[in-house]
Image (cartoon, rainbow over all chains, first blue to last red; front, side, top):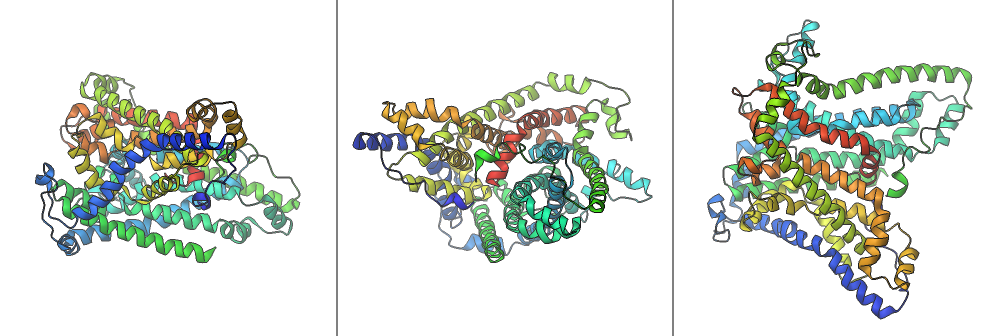
Length: 309
Length: 298
């Protein structure tokens, strides 16, 4: 992401200067117009309005006259922050992040190193297969997940072969969240693996050769070369995944609707529920709290990123 | 961020390294490699097993799906698919999904490359402001936008319309970003030559720049297709009658009214939802993965 901020190189204007400059200005704005319009209507305005909404008492009843609302200050934030359901959602989201993100990173790292450095043929094949879960529709896969983790589903049948008696995964308030987390991991590790594979391309083969000649084994090469050289990519992926997983919505929404007993309610589900109850202003307040948390996490992780590299 | 070079990822990578290794280490590496293959194949099987189960089970008679302990269908049947087709709603969901996704893909390809061209090759007042807008929209989580976006679309009377489903995603910051990165690497001399020949900016874009954008177009096309085809949250709140549902919304409502659900058609439906995207992905995965790897963003 380094080149994001660097501007396109200034070049001397060739040809007839004034005419070219004028036509460039006209064309530049014409070409940018669709984005500018979409940005103003569907991004800029909603971002600002969301903040304003969170300071009012707007509900779905005000949809016809959205500006006919009362200013209530920080009341919505107080409501959300004292709501036990919100704290349950916060806790669940934290659990998902703390379990899923490291698991995704470790699985992706091991697979990327195995595919990139360990084998000679079939790299493209494994890369493709492991990536497939990333592109599948979560709704469609949810149907399968419900079957596999049903009380008498495939997973429990497999456990039965080992004499173990599996729980009713998705109906059990303790096991429902781990089952959802497993789905989150399944859906995400391929994406991170591909990012790692791209990062591994940047490590010069010569370093490995030198280490091999010096008699370094596979483990030694992994710990002393691959991991330190890949560290910036790993940390960047940690940021990306944390931001993505903090917003996890579809998996619990489609499979458990946040239940049983709120055990899989994430912050995104909480926001969606508030919206569903018509409480637009508390939903906005909760959104901004989520936004603040994401910004804070990104800030911390980027600080780490800078200190480590 | 060198998109051009990463678009052809396999050219040099699969070449075996030169053998300048001590003999013992080489044999140990060979054993390790075989163990790795076994682990990778096992991992791949576990990874695709939910999809495999979906594929096989949708060919089972409805009654067998819940009961049967075997993954392989005892009797193959097309019954689930014909039931799905005879259900008047499902083909409609499919058509809606195709219309919405196709429009979003086309919009993102054409509009993003136009903005990408303007931002990387044209000098106009406000250019940096437009690019700042691209970066800002990148960083805002969709959830923060969701409620006010819904109210905005409702205020524009666009709920339950194709316009409401499509317009907010017709051009996305990710597409603009990928296109800008790609086009900025095209040589300036090419454009200057066309300018000296008297071509206007519109002509230069359509005749010179756009045809050269193949890899970036593939990347943006597939990224926007995956996200629009799989999108659930937005169509869920915008589509309010069944004739506006997209496939994911249709599947959600089908699978959430359990008890009356016929599992055969439901699994066939989820296969129909997954399959187009997996097929397209497998065909274009090279571009797709290059795009993911170079932007690092879903």
